[in-house]
Amino acid sequence: MVSAVRCDVTEASEVDTLLTRMVETFGSLDVMVNNAGSTRDATMRTMTEAQFDRVINVHLKGTGTAPARPCPSCGSKKSGVLVNISSLSARSRWWARPTTRLPKPGSSV
Image (cartoon, rainbow, N blue to C red; front, side):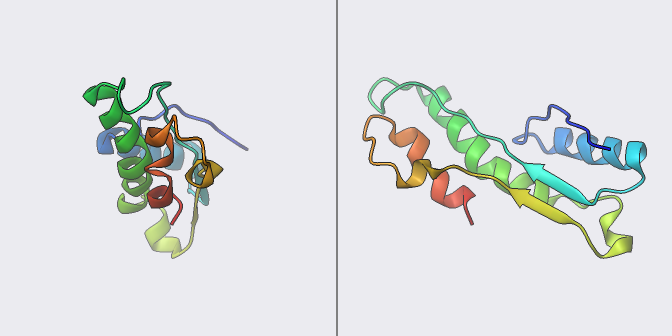
């Protein structure tokens, strides 16, 4: 069985709720796929500080929030897999969107 749940990965409380709901629904959490990403169609000159913060928070803070949360069922099993998915934007030479490229290396570790 597969389930997809919307979750703001920059909010630890939402990640906690997600993990708890998954364990309640399925009994355990074996695999979690973190495929969060955010971009704003703006250059560094036109992007607002709030837009910039959102992109950075989703890509960097969001990548670290889920692995930092204690999985309600993983401790007893001593197993589980977290898959972080990023994109090739970090390798892009498209200069117009540095805000998309900038956080990618940090989310690709």
